[in-house]
Length: 87
Image 1 (tube, rainbow, N blue to C red):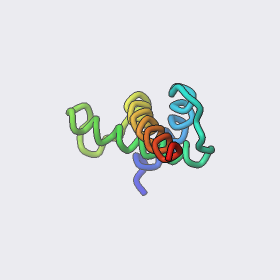
Image 2 (cartoon, one colour):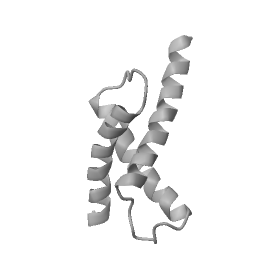
Image 3 (cartoon, rainbow, N blue to C red):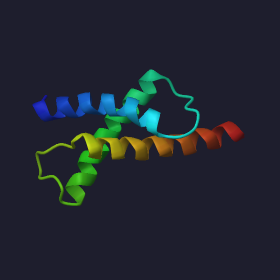
Image 4 (cartoon, rainbow, N blue to C red):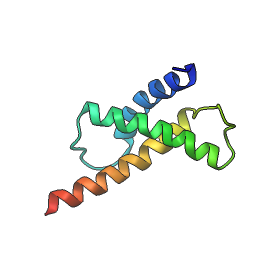
């Protein structure tokens, strides 16, 4: 695997834990779900950064874009899990 993808995963793991602390409300997910959301958020941050021209092809998201991506995904996760727990 390229070095950039490994760094995206490592940053995403850390960012997932930080995003969990930032997002309000009680989080029902465990450590693994939070880590996966953080890693996916880091990839989302890379995609968003490239879409707005912040990153060139071959560049990967830094800490702030990864955190933004993780918060977006964690918010979506909250909406989905809260909706399913009410029924």
